[in-house]
Amino acid sequence: MAEKLKMKDDILFKLFFSRNQNNLKSFLGAILGNDIKIAKVTHDARLEQLVKEMKYGILDLEVELESSEIVNVEMQLKDYKNIEQRTTFYASKKIVEQLEPKQDYSKLKKVIIIAILDYSITDLPEYLLETIRIIRGHNDYELNNEVKYYYIELDKFRKQNPDMSNTLNQWLAFIDMERRDLLEMAMKENKEIEEAVEKYEVLTGNEEVKRLAEIRLMSKLEENAALASARAKGTEVGLKQGKEEGLKQGKEEGLKQGKEEIKKIINKLAKMDLTEEQIKEATGLPINEIRQILKDK
Image (tube, rainbow, N blue to C red):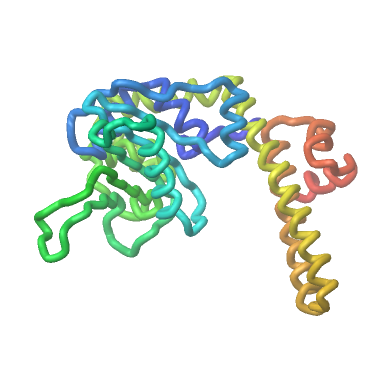
């Protein structure tokens, strides 16, 4: 049986909220703390366009509010130690995209960046972090807040006992889906969450979505293969420089990690109901090796 995508998967997150704008309105309103109205959502692109976006590591959700703010929502599952730089880049890009040459700066719309993280970036107890620029020595005086950032730390959320009568916590339990008890409480408290779960079940059974996940995995295989090739070339250069012993150890560790990664990929593809022939085509491994890996899992 193919492995079901989770709401935290960036593909499913974008598909779900772009297709269910009432749910998106409720979720964003819970973060921004007001009754927002959505003017426009960047809708689902064609399958090929989504795949193209994924190859460049970009798959976010963009919303324009009737109050003119531009909201960019991104899901990040792994900590690459660059989320501040990444979100700053996104915000700058959204600002630059707005103005044509000689256009008045007063026409710029405010930008709101929401980064949903499956890890923590601070040791603060709060799992919803909102940035505000203030004047030093005057904490009640805000300045230059044309860009605002929200960081949501899901791992911190699930480790606490959040108030499940709170709308934001209900949506986070739905998006996270790691604690069934929190999700069940959210469903009892909020009929909209219960309906959202039903929509999620329908969406994850969609053949197009399954195919999209399969293509994305293939794309990751290509990326991993390119990285492995680059590492091999780097090892070759290092050997020529005489760092034989250290590089030998690094190479052995790299090969070991590479084999483990290949095993994970093959098992993942098998769970997605790909045939041995399809797995062979995707990985380049002979059938007998693929069978041995699947046998040893």
